[in-house]
Image 1 (cartoon, helix red, strand yellow):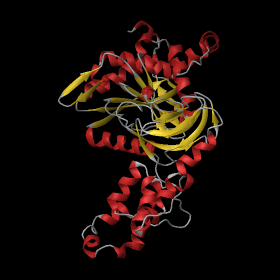
Image 2: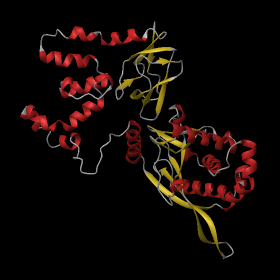
Image 3: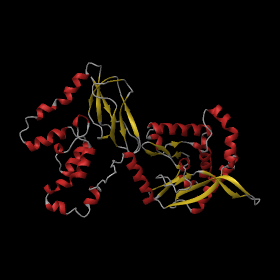
Image 4: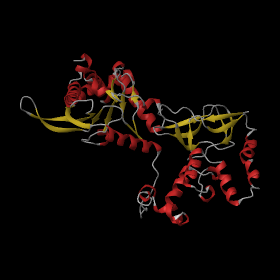
Length: 416
């Protein structure tokens, strides 16, 4: 008896994924919960684990193909002895296809029987013959990338198309379907689903929100003194490094409580005020920018916040974050300073209405209240906000409150 490998639920609003990589081949032994393949969605890359112990008897969807939630990825047969019987099963349709009388139909039928839904749809939409497209998938299967690549290079064979059809879309089609020729020293790489989604969301934020940015600067002297004084004791007691992120998270939570519009979102004709403080922390990963969420930050200690951020950073680099961990944030913090950024205007993370940008700490001459000039560790901070629901006064006051809390961390403890 075989156990089917099914595409798991991918998270809210995510219905499809690309099979990025198979870790096993047909005939390989697998253990329950062992990673079998890697799926790439619009938001994250995740692994599908084996639902049972046995032998991988079938790979129904090759690498590069698109699958929907609930679709069959493959099958696991019980025991090692069943592996040899699995290959003839997948090859069985071949003899039945050989006697097909009409050459034109026979050319398309064998390929279409093994096509994923996404590939079949592309072929039907463009009236292509599956057998004329070079296949790069496993076992000679045709992938969505193969079809798209063929469409990009097909203009050389366009004379076969009727003149009327080719002439009508001519004004717009070349820009959309024909890429610029790749020149010497250039390399063309298709964007990953994650990168495409990031691009779409950032553009959506620019097109939808009335986005403005306000700036301020923070004297980091008190934070530096605090960290120098308690760093060793903090790490020894909590097993986490005392960084600046937990201080900024706590400062933002306090400011969000005072200016709830910055913690709200627009839903149609309504404003939804969030009475919880789930702070998204922008983290770089090999796949692109991801934004995991530290939930209920008002109820967490600084040690707990630092521990969660460190864990997110490690798992982002390893590609182990889940979709659920990147959904539902109410406000975002991004720290370009770790890469050396001195000043920037962060883009909103829809549907949120505010994002705080932290930057590099630099020693700068500052005129003190007594008129003296001192070299102080200063950081520029930026708050981008949606002016549709956040007024300028609220945005500026929010950033001033963050500045006050960071420059005098005791305010955080006293909520003053």
